[in-house]
Length: 177
Image 1: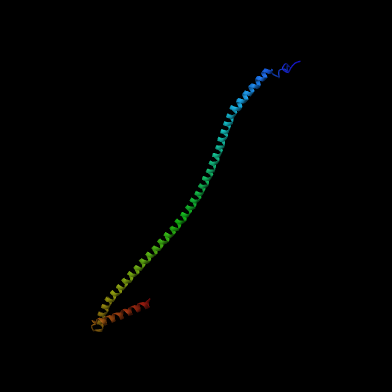
Image 2: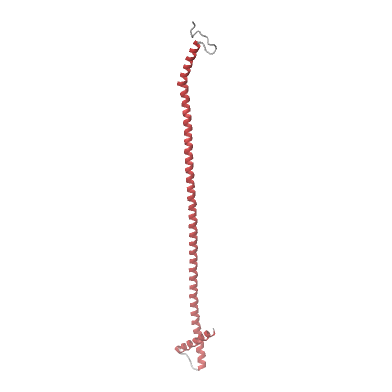
């Protein structure tokens, strides 16, 4: 009788001592791989996964910050445009007010100059009338004295005569116009 150990199964089945040595070596290699190599691979894989995840999170945070900064920039830009529009409107309003004030001042200055000129003209007219009355009165008194043949040295009588003469002149010049 032959035992299993003695049966020759051909080239596929190794010899028993080689088989046992192969299983022992496989166990040692498996143990070393399971205790040393695989944990290091797992550790490296976990580190890289954490770095990648951290990078993704950092990128997402940076993208969120960039979006927030862009929104703030747009808000600031809109605010600046609104403020510029407000400033332009205020400047236009102030310009219109200044122009209106300047026109008002110019008109009041023109009115003041016109009033002053009228007063001055009136004063000069009164002075001219007074001067004419004096001169015409003197001439009229002399002429009337020569015509009447009596002296009109009485001031009151001379004044009445001059006033009457001037009134007649004014009324005759008023009728011509």
